Length: 76
Image (cartoon, rainbow, N blue to C red; front, side, top):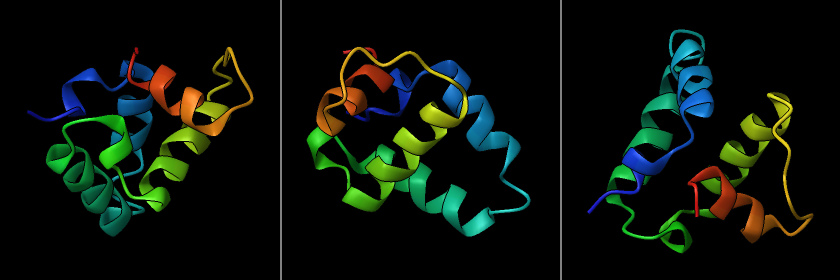
């Protein structure tokens, strides 16, 4: 079961909007989320990319903790 379906919609839209410019990054990020069953299965680089998208969108994170931010991106 993939965690991609749980990804925050705004982050998914931003990621898809960057697809042409960053095709390899987009493909790797999507592939990593499709392979992951839980948030902690994601590679650190992919997790960092997703948190960066959230920060760039001005997402209100409930914590400064990296893992908790990642969970929030997936609605957990």
